[in-house]
Length: 174
Image 1 (cartoon, helix red, strand yellow):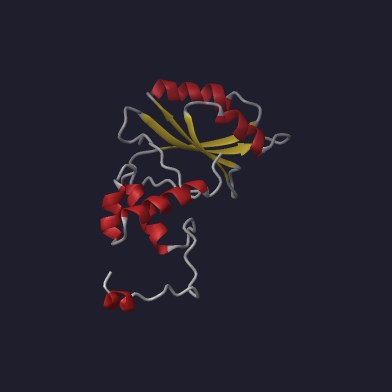
Image 2 (cartoon, one colour; image 1 turned 90 degrees about the vertical axis):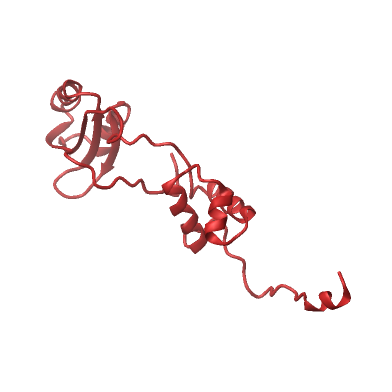
């Protein structure tokens, strides 16, 4: 460098703290996550260009968020776009003497159950069931719901049209 160029270089201001590269509150991290939610295979260079930062910055942020448990990039099959024929939400009332945890544990081992949430209100659990056809769904209801002593009540809500399907990121992955 020429002497005059050295004079133009200013030392970094150490009073400004660098952002937590894994913070969910950081604007850049939220923007990166939004882009990856649209396309989990989007190249870091493309994200960097859109965000006006370096590709290395995007790579570092993504890796930091992964290590912190804030971000996990996975492939998710959309039941609406796939060959599944039946998608239903089922509200379950757990029978006295049983717990929502026990029922959730039993149902979580079933391939057709793709979502289980402990809820407040008139149900104890809300589950989503996706099957290949109507007969499989009816068998599921008969064998896993209606014939079980741990379930006191059920309301089945069959999906007609899916308007939005967005998976939320969680800090602690299981």
